[in-house]
Length: 398
Image 1 (cartoon, helix red, strand yellow):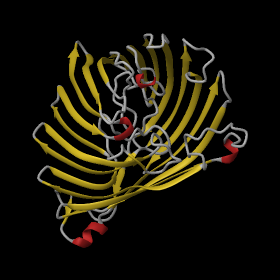
Image 2: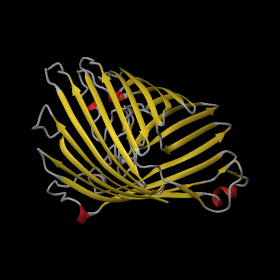
Image 3: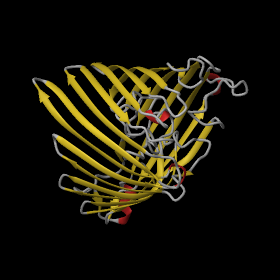
Image 4: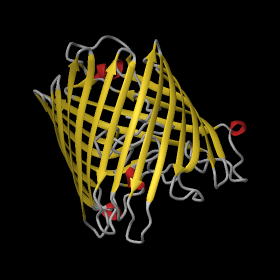
């Protein structure tokens, strides 16, 4: 909700002759003749000013280039190449510790085959094996930096009427959240098993998900949310609720019960949202928002309740405003994350403000800037959450 710089997936365009009515070619040669090429070129400048640490900055330029075969007898395949490179003269000095590594990693560049999959589809059933984009509540692409997360996975989706049923196994992942210096890393010791069901119509949606996560973040997670859309005297209103229950396994200390509610309203060019999450104390335990940006309503650009949840009750509230005029959107979000005293008597209180502007003259072009202010109200001397981050993004899909 408040991830102001979130990017859409690259928009694909078909090459060659037109596909048949069901988007499937009739010859093996047609898989290649009607293949699609798509991509994204983006550049980001990101600077951090820390009240108690060295200021850092970096600028990078990157490319995503995808090639996907047309479907033949239900089968197709695709690959996606991703690369990012720091621009030296627009980045801080690495030797002096003034360059941040979030855009291209410590090596100042990152290159990988981030997607490579085989896909089969028949009668509402879709099977996909290999490196791929996955977007679920506790595993997602989180495409707000240079390299989105992708997963080495086995995924099955079945759609019938208003229902969508998903099951899969995640083995490894890569991307900004996984750590660009580490490349492809395991999702848990033995991977992640997941299953989910979605029911959706024009006015109502409900989701139920189960995750079995092994290793250091091991837990059995149940996630449920529901939302409804209303129109009251010209005001478009969305109401939503969510629940996340994580129970520990593998001595991971992951144990959490988190509740949430959200209301979003829009009228004319104005938008307003109010979100709340409550986490109940689990002695000596913490939560795990998964592989990616996480799904909690109060997740902001930097701050999520995972950061302060260990061994304490936490209340988080986020209010946001937006105004759109023509192709320009202005936005502001204020988040207050308050944690009671933990077992040692230490409290936590973080306030974040996100101020953003976006210019999107078409579906393929995005120019945006965001200014994030984090303030550690309990510890003004800490290097954590006493900082300011300014980012500028230019993105073009082709």
